[in-house]
Image 1: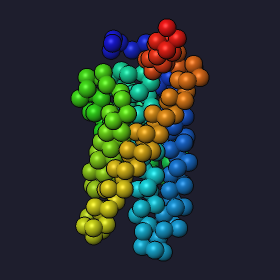
Image 2: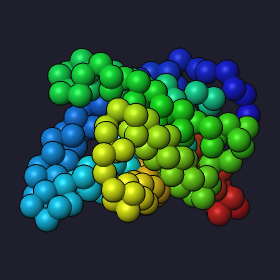
Image 3: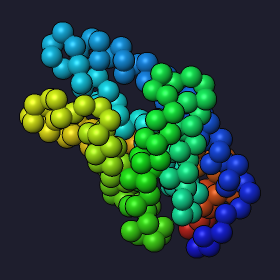
Length: 201
């Protein structure tokens, strides 16, 4: 598989980055509301953790569809930048967060030399993004002030969220799009077309 980028791949990655940048900002406010609901029960920190995986999903979808080095890293960074540009309360620091999250996913694809995009790899990429983001969060979010058991529970929940909302859901969304034929010009679409032809023969 060639690692050279085509213009249509760059365009698609940019579109996905913009679209999910808007979606990410919506989930920021949703997480805020969820945190407020859980706060009276002493579970406020979990308001964002249970949905944290959604903030990694564009890296999984873009990498799975396009299958080129940098797809996960760049798309996640674009999405974070868009959030900042449209007014995320998190501010410019969010761009660094997006870069780190994208890097977390990218290292998993890099470990396969960008050749393996099966479900286990996508799920692992979601978990890796969660781990990278959590380490970054330790330095910027004051986790050290929380109890060890709370931090451990948050870490586990974030990893599960990364596996399910980024890895599993990201694959499902991509496969649904591929099934419609709209991705036929991209690596995932071509894979689906090959499977259809194999079944027909």
